[in-house]
Length: 293
Image (cartoon, rainbow, N blue to C red; front, side, top):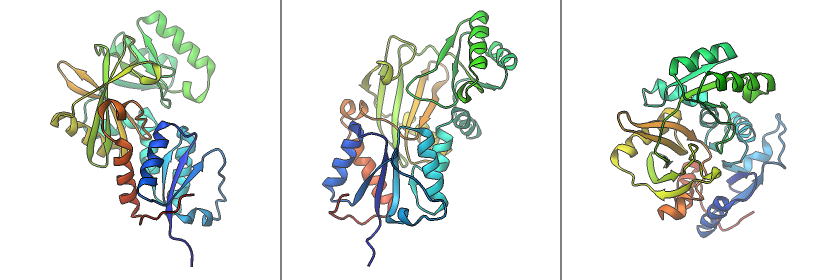
């Protein structure tokens, strides 16, 4: 008799979040396997080795690796958390902004262009300063605040000359003066479970760039807009990043499909890993067992 399917967890390295997740799974006696994304390979004509998994939870650091694993597994009918469609939408800022716009949700003014000339025109439509971001990227990397035409011409020319994929699409947003903080909300399924103010004197308020965390209360208004944002991109386990605007209210900035919560969990006191594990096991329909790979 073949063994019952178990949960797979795809990871790049074991960070503190993965340690919390593994501990929560082991506390439940759940049957799971740790899958190192640098050591796997796929025979596209033989999904058999992957049939041991009822679902695979994507915790890869690499957007590309996680996306392709999700696409392959989903094509074989093996669920992933999050799905390939959600990963693809959230991992690409253009796709995220398009999904939010289609849902009528508030966000910063955003333009997308494919040449230096068109990007300059888009920037001057918005008005300086603007922020230039790579469509794919995380941790606040490769962001540029552009204050005037001279800076715009120089930065756009540099990106065009570098020529790599992440420089070939110009994703442009209005600059929002956010008074030193933004908000990260963890959404699990249809619930906003924890909120974090990320504070910094720098205009980039990302904990990977030195921002510090402070608990943010989840008000009904904040919960509602985060739930709508999650639905707009397909739902699952998400980190919603928002700005506060004095006239326009909450503005959605980005949505993270494999969100980090190493700051949010201790600062808010919410056991996010435990709640995520509950959601994943329920979503995968897994019976718990005591064996751990």
